[in-house]
Amino acid sequence: MVERVHHALAAVGLLFLLAMMLSGWGLMASYVPSESEAFGSVLYLRRLGGMGAFLRGIHYHAASGVIIAGALYCAVGFVIDEPHKHPVRWSLATTLVLLCGAFSFSGFLLPMDQNAYWGNQVRLGIVESVPLVGRIVADVLRGGASANASTLARYYSLHVAILPFVAFVLLVALSRSRRGTTEHPHAALFGATLALILLYGLAAWPAPLEPAAAPSDIEYTPRPEWYFLWLFQIGKYVHAWPWIQSAVIPGALAAGLFAAPWLPPISRARRGAIVVGLAALWVGLTGLARWEDRNLEPRPSYEQALQARAAQVYAADCESCHGSDGRGDGSQARSFDLEPPDFTAAAFWGEATPQGLIESIHDGKGQDMPAFGKKLSGEEIAALVVYLDRYRPESP
Amino acid sequence: MEWADAGRISDFAPDAWRLVTVTVHSIDRWRIEAREETVYVRRRGADIEAMSPVCPHTGCLVRTRDGGFECPCHRSVFDPEGNSLEGPSPRPLDRLEVRQEKGRIKLLYRRFRTGVVTPEAI
Image (tube, rainbow over all chains, first blue to last red; front, top):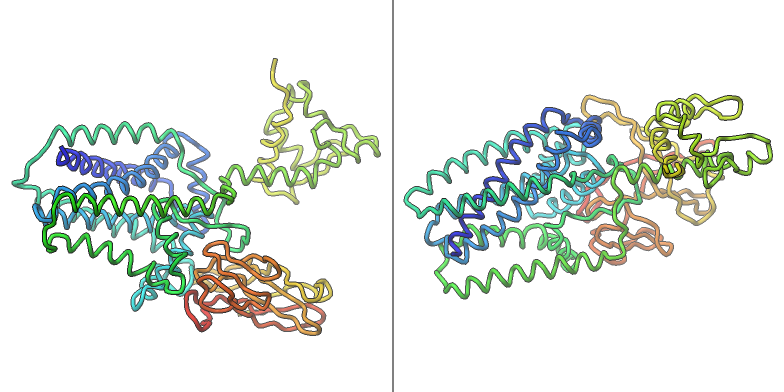
């Protein structure tokens, strides 16, 4: 039974990898790996919805899926003593799982939103604390001692050329190493189908996107992805010796995986106990990290941040005439005898079009509405038009 | 490297750190960049002091808290002088070179390597 689960997990992982490859190819049709264009090209996909947003959703969820499937595959494989039964397959498979970590690391920066920029900043800081090699690795990744114009190109080439090549070689080697082993085609088919259904369902939730990277934003609180929270939590306890977090613990984990075929065999009960213990540790540390951050405000998405900005603009530049509830009864309007429109009236929305509203804000209207085209960006004006929608009366 | 303008000296209340945004021009590979950077600036009698908000641990930006500073990433805490009080930061917050010119504050914006004990400009 457990062997079948192991097989099914392999199929799930491989299907997710295939989904990543195909959706990745699709994303490459629009994504531009340049610091000034990257965010815009990802935002374009998100705004447009359709196939681009669907592919990005698939890519995002499959990335999480492949990490879960990979971790479970290693855990179940360890329990059924895969390291001693099929040492070559075990070594290749665990290398592939670790390679997925490298994929995640390099792909993480590509959207160039706040999460990507700050997360990468902190990750590289942690990499730098690895004794002897950490600094060299970080400098090669960045192309210098700090992030620069070459950084994104390096991450991109790793993500779409170098790592896929290594993964391909590993997969070919894996397919050869399977000869002579017991197959469970039905379990594999079941796993692949399950993964496919899961992925299709998850794609309904678009991949998140935060505001564009702002390296001088002092308000931003970065947090690692869920699968790194355990290490983040450990970092809090060993902060005087950062290399424990960056080198000793991940190194021990990787060494354990690679050395497993050569370690003396232990009973199945004991192997199970090790896996359950590690899983409990993972759950505990992740839970603790989340609990300690319980008062942390959730980070706004791009759209939420833009609407918050629109609210600011409305309060600063519009409210004095248009009024805090959009009725056109602000203090200025009353004292100067102006007659701004009533945003809560159905008549106003009967005539208003998004394009017309944008023009009115940009160029001004009549004698009283000033032009804001120089003061506000196109993005802010568009956000204001969306913001005004809150005053629109519900249609009868 | 050029001296970036950080505002008029008279706009700074004495003895309190204030967050200032400066525009820094630099040559990055093939392009000339104008980046916005944030800096803490304080007036101390006739002196002006400037401090980088970049946490020496992994490079997040520290915020003011109880007169001192705190990093939101790994909870490094610093006193009002920027000295490390608790948390993983390997050194105090980095000071930046400042000079006064015709009533205005000019500063030399720099980044320093994170995770090392002695500051190392990059």
